[in-house]
Image 1: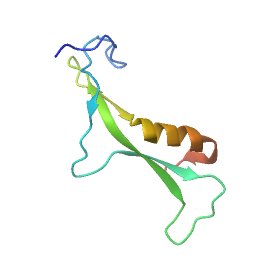
Image 2: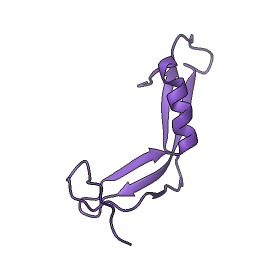
Image 3: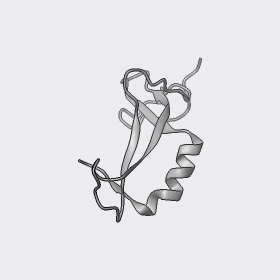
Image 4: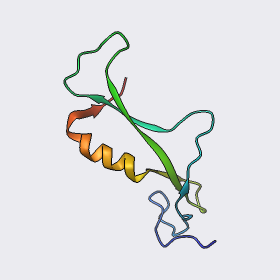
Length: 88
C-alpha cells in the first residue's frame, strides 16, 4: 500500500496512509457541541455530537488525522450556526 500524496500537517512529509475506517474500541471519538440558546437542564447543557469514524496516519511522525463520515459532516454543516464549542 503506497502512502497518499497528501502532506502531514505536523511534519509536512508526504507519508500519510490512505483514508481508512477508525474503529471505536473502549471509548468513542466524537465532536461535541453545545446547542446555542438552550437553557441547561437536569443533565446539563443540551449538546449535539458527530462521530469521528475515519483516519489517516503519518508513517513519519505517527500523527493521526481523524475525520467525519459524510452523513455526520452533512449534519454538522446543517447545524453549525446553532452550535457553540462545549469546553465544559
